[in-house]
Length: 343
Image (cartoon, rainbow, N blue to C red):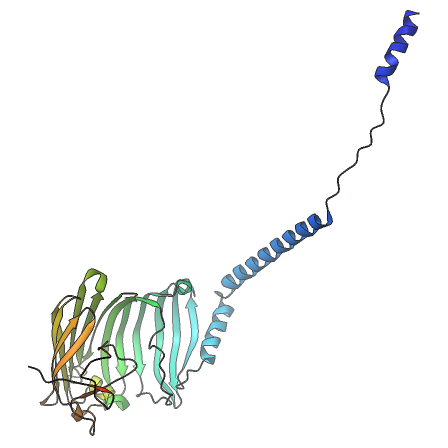
């Protein structure tokens, strides 16, 4: 009896209840979102892989050849074209441009067998041209270039970019006889930093005598304008003898000497510009700068450069670097700035 009772007592505890488990299925909208996220992820990975392959692939031999071909295919509005025979090294750092040729509509006028460039091209994404160095042992100017005339434009001379050139150097800049009458060799070196609110340029050069002649050209130029630090240093010294390279390039038949110097800072700077053409005076000007506005006073004989132009008139130019006041009483009815007699 006890056994039966025990069995009967255990019956309700061991009876298994049927439980139906229902699995929740994701909604159609949820599946669409998951599929969209996966598709987007695959697209992003694919584009990233493509860009990486492109960046790495273009820095190979065939890629550098492609870049050289694209450069050769460009033609500027004035007819200038640039070509490179070969690019060695890295397109993203240190590279060598071999067989650089610059042409005008008449053909090649400038050539360099090899130019070494160290730059950071990705800085351009932040409107920054970053050239650590650009050097050449030899650059040959075969003749003076002749470009096509282009219509006047109000566009700025340079784009709105920060420009850094750490070391610009040409060991032998060779101007062949068609440039100035005989073969001449010049050395050129400089550096530049141009950014918002500052301009710093330092350059120098001079011709090397060949067989005891052909030397004498020299120039130095220093510009250090940093308004935020109240700094302004401006100094230019040019000596171009008659028949020399600089006079030949500028189209002068007489010697040119120019000296621009001054003292002060950005808030108040006083200087002078003295220039001679041949044995006579070309300009004796007093310069003053007050917070970036330049004032010019003095006597000039610019008519000696361009016959027919009023001797006391400075023609305006869209590329002028002198921010003279637009409301100046010195502006003449012919649309130029008159150089006032010095007092």
